[in-house]
Length: 451
Image 1 (cartoon, rainbow, N blue to C red):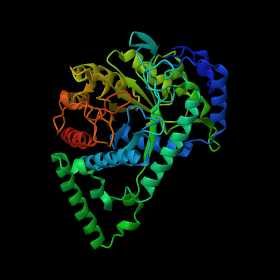
Image 2 (image 1 turned 90 degrees about the vertical axis):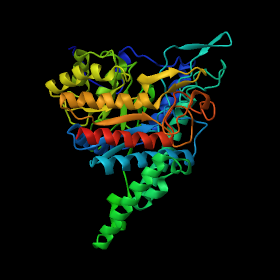
Image 3 (image 1 turned 60 degrees about the vertical axis):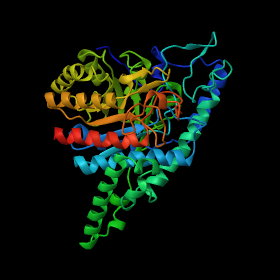
Image 4 (image 1 turned 135 degrees about the vertical axis):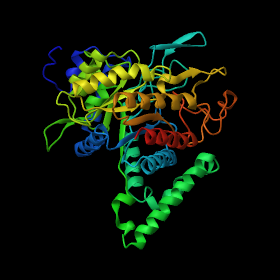
């Protein structure tokens, strides 16, 4: 393995960097990044360390990771209601998993920073004209015109402020009563309640109510117990625009270590995980828990090198490996990787992203995913872990709390003809709230069978 040299927040600049916008005005970019560097951190180092401790329990098989949220957050579709509904379905999924599997659920949102998206090409052809690809609202606008697609560094600052607002609301909701277990019935949206999955959830909620009543009858003050009235929901995003991440990197006053204070957890995508690349170089030096996507082309040798670079001290919870192989490839492709990592003694969290390997274009022309393929990939993920004697530590899914029609199947049996009804994503198709609740029950059954 190559000698990595001394790490600094800017040492990534000495490496080849992929998936970066071509900013037309370097001076404007520098001005935006300098402004962000003077702004307060979005999260704190102590919070990131708390998440790492919780992920350490996942790595040892004593907890389960639920990482969920938007494919790409939007500047236009930003409101307290949308944040609340997204949190609502995450809480529902977490309570289903907690009650059914019997282990703590570590809740990490794809929110408060998930604005940038990697693209397969720098340009796309619209009406016979090549225009820059949409790279997420942190870079440019989704409108299909050349002017709208010019990367604008002022959007970096706007992304910071929207992330701050989102975090403020998340903290208010999770600590201010919304997440109280006594409100478990109110977490059901109206369009979910009418579904079989919603009715199944209501039965579970009634059981929780009876358990709380029993505890109160025994003299336990459930209202005063913060474990029942508050939850921790951490934030995460793909650390794609490295200049933005560097601008939010701060030295912790307690430990002296560097932390990327844009989110509690950052991950490296499938397109940017080169061993000698800028993204790996940057994330190896920050103290946050980090993730790395693992696709079907990953070799055991490459994965072991990544583990050694990203977590040389072998700290449990520091590194999450997020598989995204496709339903037809996951079981066969994952087993040798599980074996290699276990044999080498790396204490990683294994999570399954069942979305990105199962994307296809429907006859209508819409990019979509089928709920059955999503479940099949998670099932193959669990089977591979069972065969190798390792813990299937979590799932990583794209979803919304809204009643969208972007993924086929599920309890509503959404068809291709339904996709145009409410296809609202700015990038990839997401599960709606009904499908999210249904998925939680399916995952709970798979993990129950595993244990």
